[in-house]
Amino acid sequence: MSSAEDDDLPVAGTAVILRDGTRGLEALLMRRPDRGSFAGAWVFPGGMLEPGDRVAGAEESEDAGRAALRETAEEVGLALERLVLLSCWVPPAGIPKRVRTWFFLAADPGTGAVAAEDEVVEARWLAPEAALAANDAGEVALMPPTWRTLHGLRGAATVQEAFALARVPEPAVFRTRMERTETGRIFYWDGDELAGGAPGARDRLIAEKPVWRYERV
Image (cartoon, rainbow, N blue to C red; front, top):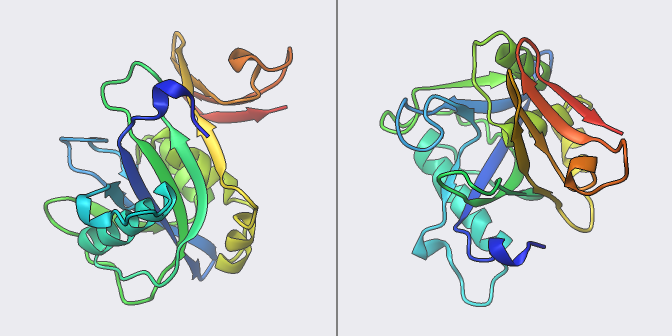
């Protein structure tokens, strides 16, 4: 799954919690405090593996799922009933803190999210399109894995349809690379010509003002 230099990365688990809102699919996003990891960013609940999340002989993704469940309970007070493995994110080389993160889909248990004051400034349910638009408007700050995950959920009208998107034999693996531009950054993945793909091939997020855009050819 990963290259040799990525084998020893610390691991985390993230829960993409979804519900059927009055106007369609919504995801739970929370704003981190203006300190620590992802300062000020709007992210899905989740966090680093702790010793208690590890089970001898288990797959890394299974341990990450236990971390996602625990962190979700700690951060927003939700006890999730089921996780569906969606993707694995390997961060770009050269950034200060690199963590391999497993993303899981989960349905809102309907008990009401209660944000932990020391870890969450605010929590909101947003439709994927609304969250992407809010990022462009500067109302929220999304990280590339969050942005692309929301972008991929746009075609799902319900939680059931979103879960169907994840029903593949293996989770999608995103080995992220990054290049700076004059007005922002380009994040790109396997298959893009910048990652050694065919000339003209695109699998990239162009994170520049005023509007972030995703290209795949």
